[in-house]
Image (cartoon, rainbow, N blue to C red; front, side, top):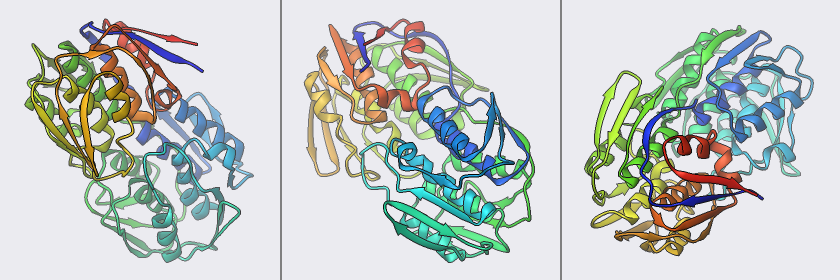
Length: 412
């Protein structure tokens, strides 16, 4: 099993190009199932979850060559457990398969163990659109002659729920309205790709999305948006190490809340077109964080700010409102000397002058990133174990950090 060895005490300096967004790429790849024409996708990130999605689509019969996806000869309407167990996003094939082929059999998903992310929102929406659904032997089996439009109000804001039902609705008969829909930029990116394929969608980016079904979609060329979470992770890493970095190929307008918190922590930030410059002189100030659905502070940046607060000047309060198990990185940060107390969904962090290197274990994707950041500011060597979590959502992170001056290497 591979690990990362990090020597702390080095500032990040330089320029780094931001990769395509994993959380936009995965649903957009699934959108290829909606047409028999070719879908050409640019800016797909080179990471494990994307490779898993490629294997899943190929197993269904999608022909994939470089950035070209062709679902003209799909012959297997199933996402099996062994392909789905490591990646919850595989549930996103359910809507496209059902609306185009009239049937789908999808294993109940796996992925990071950071909390319950029930699929009942997907199922309720598809039932309202006329699907017949049974759950048997760990699989969702859905059938429908043709889905029809429906008025669907989500009980909870769900990104994948919004994406799945939006894809199902583009080929349904009539108009579908999704209320209390997710507003994330990745949802907008999927909608823009679907529109490029001929879908009729209005309101993406608001809490009410209206989809007018069409008879068929056509091929398109589309470039996946830059990854706002990778952008935020590198910015926090630079702020924590007292560095000066420039992100290229980024989109600051998807990071408003993160940039505001970094400025509160003392970072100097300048934005020009697709470039974000950050400079941090001295120790960061403690900054309070409360996660909530977009456009509020993203849960996927909570762990990284926890690491920043661990060495900040002052006391910070972090409240997690999205996932009930998303404080599992706290005990690992404590192994490095972080002073953190947990009470329910609230963490209180008293910043330390410094952390001490130790061996720690990644528990989920974003927790991995927080441990890497903590390792870069700790004295001595930190070993981060179980980095397969990290590889699911970051493209060559150790190579990018090394190019910025970090002392980090992958070991077996």
